[in-house]
Image (cartoon, rainbow, N blue to C red; front, side, top):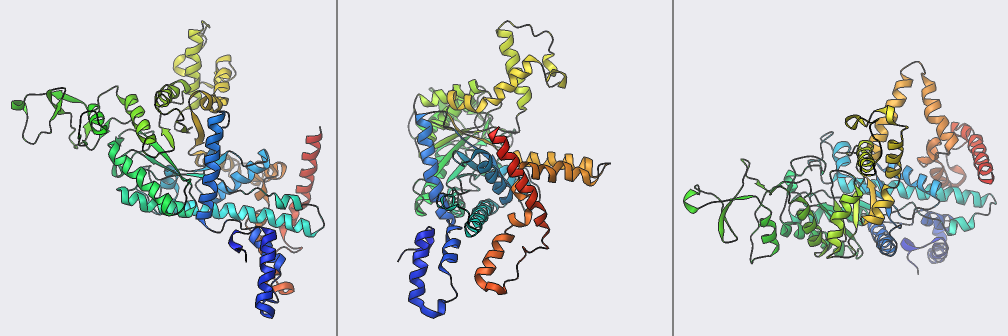
Length: 543
């Protein structure tokens, strides 16, 4: 007999029919069609089912990118399951497929929005359990999106519409998630334990950074402290073991280096022989030549090129890297990570500059030809100013007259329609394709988009609602836009599962079911509007 947990509609129908025969009259009220429908509407029974399924997708996408760099992938950071759900519903609606679109779970947003301590900075102070909890929540909402959409299709099928092909070829809202484990929240055993929870919740890709876990900083802030390669490799191993233990053989590890902006290290690794990894790491540490008689009590000394040197040590005990070594450290970090089990790289950069990213990636690719990046299209960058500066420099080199622009005030709105600013916007528009083609960027993500969109939309609604517009601010700026644009949650009762629940109650209780979707349900007011909107969209497509 087939396993219902992994069945599609047809095989589930057959299985339940066989079970009814087996258990006889005691199962008399169970309708095989209804049970099979519920099985089809909940394709993924566990987070591990999701992790295994999405890991295969991501591996294929990586191979597609290796064959053609225009096959890059994208994601947006989501801090709540509902946000992720609405994102993927919108992806299916506007782009007709979820292919090459992922989800991103940002540790920054978990800290800022999900901690029981309240809003926190991105310094690994939030509860580690909040991370797998958010992954689980996101996939609960995506599974509900599957169930709601399929339930609508089954209803239409029952009403005589020919939608069987849409049911048979239904594309799930479940997509890969790249989940941020920060610096591992402790030692390698702690990293392993948390990685297991994240994978069990559904994560097929885990991103880890080479900072000290108890002194972790946001990648776009100062004060970052990195760890020796041996420490980082141990955590890469811990994550791989977690994937293998749970049977997610295609699990993906994203190794992030913060060395570009990090000038400090907490530890001096022990070198076993000249030129080994520890030796290369120590070579980056700033040190001053010294004679033994000048050494202080309890000084730490090194022998370098036959000379005695004293590493520069700050009052807090941290050691300083030599200025100008950051790019070399990034390249060594990347090569070392790929040679020790990482699948993808993440390089935190000070600005979104394709040429600068490509310079580092090309050095890595000279050693590991298929090296690929996950790149943070971060809201921490002032994208407008960065690209206006880039274009200004290009125009100077090309001999353009730039005397009408004040280089110190290129953010001025007065420039918005100028040639310089239009060229800058064009570079922003093509940044992801250019980065994929020229700088090895396989995956582009925005870490905090929904943090900022929530703030922006609340700002706009609040301005009008508490001002002269009153209720019109909501109706005109929100609800009417939802209706015009066919946003699924305009019928929020349906989106929350009310129709789905009504059908389930009918399965369970038959005519005795107390349902919410009767004539007095005010959501019915949106039926005509939705149909009219569909007509408008169909006419637009014809035109």
